[in-house]
Image (cartoon, helix red, strand yellow):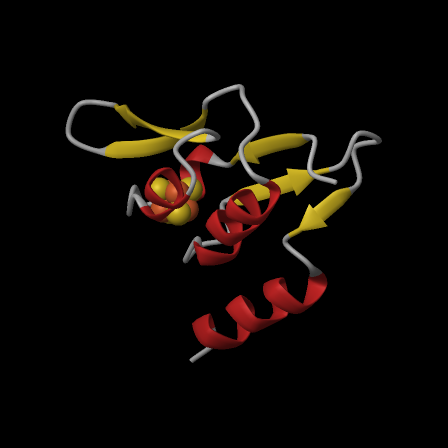
Length: 87
Ligand code: SF4
């Protein structure tokens, strides 16, 4: 069960997928000439949080359980992203 969300700011490209998919858990943060995602500090629907993380094009979102174990990104998701960026 997802208990905590982390967003790696440097990896976020501000596409908006996460805060549109799950506005309970993610919000936009205006940093001047760019937008970044931030966790709202609340949890949203489990499926929507997962969909938001899976939809992040840079895997900037980590989903953790109550013990701090990373539920997402999975090794498979990291490998898939790596494969698309290795030209
Ligand atoms: Fe940033 Fe990923 Fe959210 Fe897009 S989906 S705004 S890249 S954290």
